[in-house]
Image (cartoon, rainbow, N blue to C red; front, side):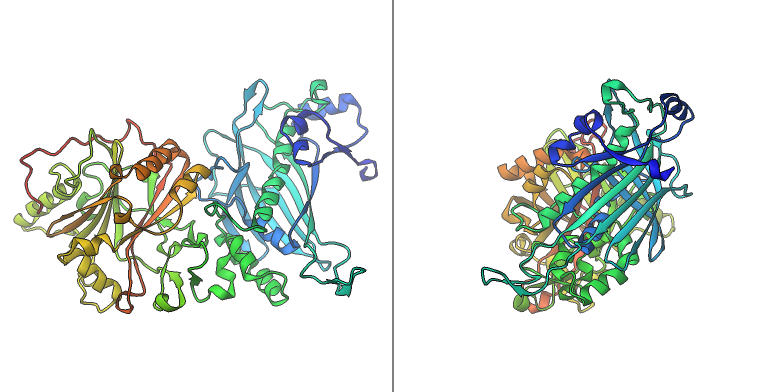
Length: 582
């Protein structure tokens, strides 16, 4: 019966092997007086491991801890899979928002090493629901379910997970009084804290045995997964501790909180009205969209933000059959490696930026991403890919010419803006189609059209050198790469050599990373970790006066876990007698 249940400290075994004690974290296991034969029989019947529990005191208010629990490690997935990166024990994505207090998530664990071999990674489909109690405590529950939008994933074992997280406030709330030292004690100078308790029970399924082993202090192999689940609390603790201090490094990967936004807006609004959380705390948790000081869609340039993770899960993919096969002839980089992110992810200069230094969401971009190439080369092709007779631009123009000669209609876009990044041994080429010429020739009366007209059709390369800007963002990636690449918008010609190739139907910008030792070093480091990274890049023209503000993103691209190796298509040097650009 329940009266016989006791929580016994989990000493040795997986608690020691996985380092819980080194972090000052005590783990407990449900203990019952059960005969050994019954234990073995329950294991053979396929029953899950016993429940496990852990507690941590967090240096944050219950609300802040709740928001961090709900959003931390919510990452961008690849297909049906959300892959934890090197800094994460687990990650998840929201499959469906049920109502204001429930959703369904896909939770993915990293593989575990259970001597003498590695296990396959486990994943779980969970119904997650939560409530706020009258005493200020938050309760979040998890139960395994099935969902049609999350089938079994090859290479993963679908386990069963049940868990409850509670976040409790202190029993006695600080009140205003005068201390013995004469110092006034208020809510402002008393550190906020809460107690997070987690109880989980996991059946990892697969071959993992649950038989208690004396060598593991009578713990089964399956209990390692319960310990791994509880260690997620350390990720929450680290995220909250980092938020309390001034950042001395580039912003770390932020959680995408769009699924949480629809479900917790009422809680956040109530907390703001009662002064339980401020705008700075919301921004630090990746919830900048709820900060009053950043509405409507603004953010001050004095902060480190140039990217809004609220929109980071949104992306679209081009059709390889569009634009007369523009993206498929020759073969583009496979669609699994690239996409077009939501341009609202990027902050750009607002209308009054020169006076108030405020940035705004970009809104829709001018160009549409239609193709991406990542090709191998023997040496950099600095004459441009758009003039290469065997590459997609010249091939597409040749096909269009034949169609028109035969009396057929062509759906090829009237103009293309192409960004060609030359890195050691490779070229990354991004093609943006312009469907409406008024958006770039100055005739629609907008600041961005005026600036684009001068950039594309004006005579001055000096103007182009001082205008073309890149906003980088490592969405998922190694700390060293984030530090090397940074997140600050950059006028590229200040850092490396920038070349231009113009044609009647295209304009190509070539960024020669080999011209800068610093850029070459950063690129080589990035290539080392490329298969673990998701990188967003936004391209635009910088506005420096009232006539060219607010800025507008021309186009953006997302590169996802791209392997820069021999699998990439090889491009030969163009013939010396290649035709001039058309």
